Image 1 (spheres, helix red, strand yellow):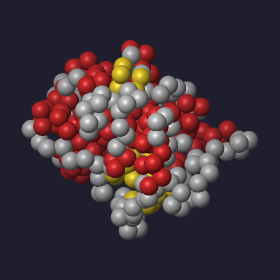
Image 2 (cartoon, helix red, strand yellow; image 1 turned 90 degrees about the horizontal axis):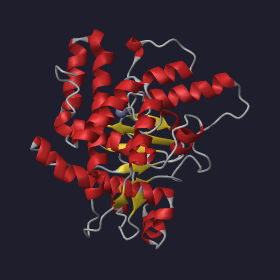
Image 3 (cartoon, helix red, strand yellow; image 1 turned 120 degrees about the vertical axis):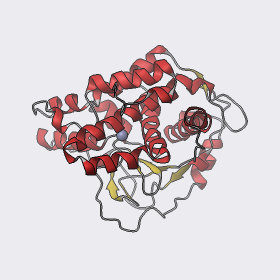
Length: 304
Ligand SMILES: [Zn+2]
């Protein structure tokens, strides 16, 4: 994967709330020498909620979601010449690419206007309209305030503890979260919740379909990402290689529910799946990537 160093990072699409609480430092408390149970516990906490649409959040709303970070320093940093050497500027550019894609893809595929949404960078903890959250829940989308939330130190955990390495895992994770935003805009998410209420026994299976569809949407973005441009028309990606795509697929596999259950030493139990098995996640990401068409992501359809 190569980014175009001339692409302009639009930091107005992110809300930098790092350092506005939580005290900076290392975001994710990784217990060193804290016993295997501790590490496994954190991995499970992260993975259960990973790219998880905010299901694991504390439902008690504490008035969050209306906070605004200070983007001034990020804006300066990301307009510097070697901005793309910085993790946060690169991630802001990934967000730009994903949203540029949906601006055209959503009307094309579904006949509806795309409404942009910001990604909140936070460290350690954050208050959202879906409740208070800490880094342990992993990146998530909150349908109540339409925002994507991520503590960027999550990527280190993804690489170190889950073995999902490679830069392309990062835009994959973000594209999955924006997939949830698209589901929110299209009403798919609300429809799924109503179905869950009517049929509580299928609640997990329905949640899995929503997750797999977000994976498929991420694949559709990946296919079209090299066609995305900044607001001056400069291409964002110079190239995306087959290796990048295998990295994304590898990440999707590593965070499948069965892989998580196996890592945690528990027997694999499909009834507890909330995100789909490794094979399913891989399969749906690949479907989106192969077709490049979000309409093909009909995980709720009869053939799924
Ligand atoms: Zn998700």
